[in-house]
Every structure is written in structure tokens, then in C-alpha cells.
Image 1: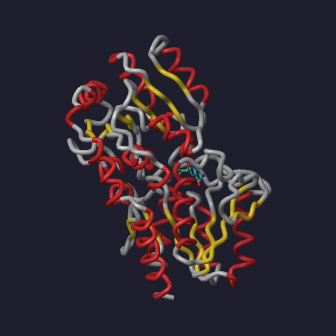
Image 2: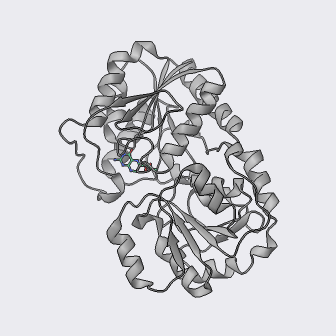
Length: 354
Ligand code: HBI
């Protein structure tokens, strides 16, 4: 197939602003190329990726959807990069069999009937706003089978969807993650530094248990970060920045566990796969994607949402977990090959309906 991937509109590929979508897009693109498909990726400038075919589109970024209220109207900046990416797609659509949209924005869904080329939409977060809920529901009704989610619990946050819905889970390139059987006395936290990720709870665990917390991810909300540092002055925490996959896994693999503290329904939680790939157990609030990934008591622990004491209790039980079982779950359930298989099935089903 000749595929056009249109990236998230809130940041260039490689910036980290796109969070899990960047890793997801990279992994799907890599495995589809490996399986012999042709592919181009549209990204806002200045994409720093060099290993994949990226066409850089100029223009102003969208506001991140998490920062808006449910009833906020849709906003478009002047010279919108989202609009520019879709103008490119409209002009070049004859060159492709299928377009895959990664942007969590109203426009791509609204434009679906205006293009001749089939469009698949990967919805990358849970429900955040009424206007997007409505256009996603409408698109699922007009174009059945073209809406994909990571998990059923994520899809369940959206009202009035018309089946069939596709659940694509996620996947990682396991060759990038090195197993470690003997961790140091430290715990990891990975993700965009932003309120919906609940970092303060992981810091509270570090303060209470005195186990050093290694924090990695894009510094998205500095006010939020400063608040945490003020509130937990002498917690043993260290912020290492937004690292490359290799540098990140060098740190994570030596941790006793990854803490996941989502305040919202995390659509998936790629970081859980990255930890499991290194043999690192995942301790997560039992909500959203991570609750569908972690095998409670076997590859980590699922904790009552927002319960810091529950996280601390789980940390004390880590010696019950066999780290190799964590690695094996990543190998069997979350390999790139399995991911490619799921996307190919989805795309073929869409093309069969055209
Ligand atoms: N917000 N408006 C908007 N559009 C996106 O594509 C978007 C977003 N917020 C976050 C985001 N994408 C990704 O970081 C998550 O889907 C992972």
C-alpha cells in the first residue's frame, strides 16, 4: 500500500510535545516500511527525524486539547499547520491508497468526506471535548470502521460511536530495549510533565519511601513542575529531561519499577511497554490503557486510582515480580510485528469497503 501518515499538530516530530503519538507514529511507520509498504509522513516543521521519510509542513501549531474545556469552541490559528498539512494531503491524495490521521483535532475528521482518498483516524487520547466527540461519532457513522483506538477503555469514553471500532493496542521495537535483571535502588517516572499525568503522586512516593525517583519526559508545564518542587522540597527526585529512546532505556532498565500515575483515562501508555521491554515491572493506577497492559501481580501491580498509599504498598511487594516475565510480556504481546499485523488488517478492511 501507498500510505500517507499525517502527524499530530501540536509539535514537530522529535520535539516530545506530541508525547506517545511520536513513538506510536515512528513504530507504525517503521514496521509498515519493513513489511514493504510505501510511506510518507507529514509533520510540522522542524521535524528532527532522519531515519524516516518526513515532509515538513510550515505553519502555526494547534493548542493542546488537554488544556481546553469540554465546551470550548474549536480554534484555528492563522496559517494553521494543521490546515496546511491537510491542504498538502488534498493536493497529493491521488498518490496514496490510504491516509492515516494521528491528530487529535476536529479538522481531519470534518474533512474526511471532502477527500476521495480513504482516511483512517487513530484517536490518541480519551474524550476531552464535546466538539471532537461529536465529529468523531459522526465520522464513525458515515465511514464505519475508519476510527481506531488504542484500547476499549479509551474508546468507552466517547459517546455514540458506530461499530465496528478497531483497537490497535501499541508496540515497541524490542531491539532498542536491553533487559536488566539487577536494578539499582531507584524508580522511574516517564511522561510529559503536565497535570493530567499526576507526577506529584510519584514524587510523594519517593518522599515517603526515600527511594530516588528518576523523572524523564518533555517539560510541558513549568508552573506545574515548580509547584511540585515547592510542595515536595526534599523529595529524592531528579529530572533528566526528554531523552532519546536509547538514553531513556539506559536509565529505566536499572530501575526497580516504573510508576504510572495518570489522572485521566490514559489512552494507552507506551511508557509501560518501554519499561516491560527492559524487564521493569509497572506499578500503575488501575485506569485506562495501563490497566489493560499490566498483569497485576505478574508484570507489575494495579493500584486504586489516586491512592498514593496504594502505590507505596505495591513498591514494597516488588520482589514478588520476576523481571524476565515483564520482558516476555513485551515480546509476546507488544512486538512491532504484532503491531504491523493489526494495522495491515485495519487498512485492508477499510480499502475493502471502498
Ligand atoms: N492536542 N489539539 C491537539 N492535537 C493533537 O494532535 C494532540 C493534542 N494534545 C496531545 C497530543 N496530540 C498527543 O501528545 C497525545 O495524543 C499523546
